[in-house]
Length: 208
Image (cartoon, rainbow, N blue to C red; front, side):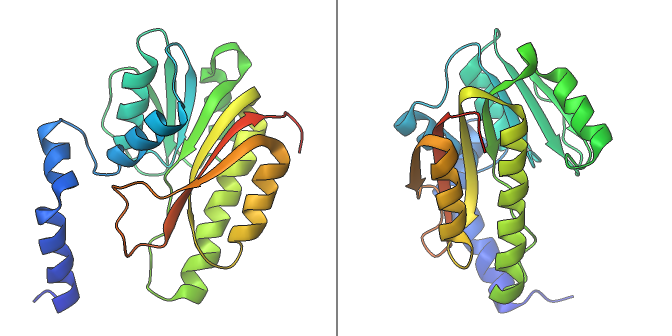
């Protein structure tokens, strides 16, 4: 079947993308890795020995960055409904983290009963229809935030992909009511035409 013009354009853009080429050279699974690397440096997200939860982790680009950042004394627990090839230093749980069985598995993996940082680069399969895509994207942010409330230690951090549009301001207010500092970022590795942004929240107050 012939590819559409827009599909060919995306493929050409993808393979000419400097971050795609760099990820291949650096042995990283995804160009998205560089978004977290940039956020990590800018907002000092990582420390050696941290416990990190990566939601919607497949194919593993963010888990790789997290594992390298927290070191051998740290712990990364990743979860996705899709399968993910093993990564050194990452415990992977396949399944829907909103289901009790999967959630219990995830909890049992956490050191000292809590996480220092919850990260999520989740996004729905986009249809291109804003009225469908935006609510689905915001729902995933709500799920990630709810999980953060359940597993974060006081003072912990939260990083999540969000899309500009309906629901954005409400979620930003919710984050600001539960974290002492919330930044809105657009990493260089994020494509300019994309509506994606990232909430970077620090200082979880342990109340919501």
